[in-house]
Image (cartoon, rainbow, N blue to C red):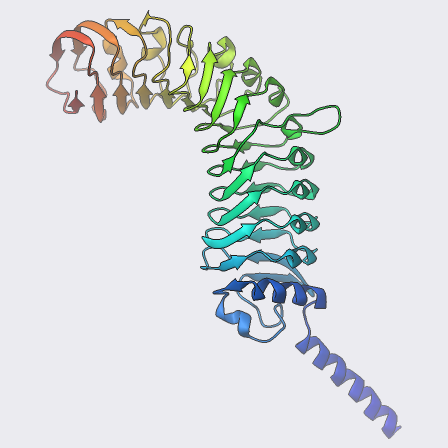
Length: 387
């Protein structure tokens, strides 16, 4: 009996010792050790033994024995992302953002993290092409690769991530066109749950494909500004009535702005400056949520100030420099309750400029340089900057 009791005691102590000294799954330990070996400036706590879960390594979250989250934003990490990151197969969140010393290519083994829901590599220095294996991350809802040096085309395979709600590829060096579905491959038009498509500040080119937009989408942000897109703005954008911000500025877009743009009654910001757009100014009547209208430096037809200049109750910024506008400027524009900035430089407004006492006194500035205004009549209550 004594021997049996001693044996049982030994087994209990052994089990307790094992739990204390080896709380982390061995494959996760090996993956984190490989990750650590390729980096400099890992957190000091990563030197506390070889048990990330038990020693509570900074940025490492565990569930039972498995690593489920790795959040190391703004830690000053320097080095490359180890291919062994793919061994952390229970990972649901990976955030390495704002570590400018993180460089090299993005390993295809990132696609092995098939439980990943959040992937944020924003503000690092990754290079090379986006691995098609990203399309294997079927549970992903948030993907931000903004502010790196990625090159090449957007992979068609991203269309497989049908749970994706946030896709931010801005501020890279991506080229080629926006991939939409073909007979052999899905494209970004499959992202029916996406709320944000943010591709600003790249080198994307070709037309914006009409197939990208449909009435069953829930997009709120479409930000394609500062690229090299050409061709006409597809009228299918007007089908997505959930859009709040539409940024298409600083491209080479041509043709008319689609007449159904005013279907977007929830739109807050319309930004299309510095293109080659022609035809009439869009009719924005009834778009009562608009805060910002930026249409400068296009080739619109000559016209007088449209009626909506004075009827958009939420308008905060109006910028239509070089807009081919002529005639008199309606004084009611300056009475809009939230108006802050008006810039209508290099147009052909003429006659007398009236700014009466019923103005919004929170206006910050009005810029009417290089028009044909011959005289001004301004009430003393106007205290803002007038050019």
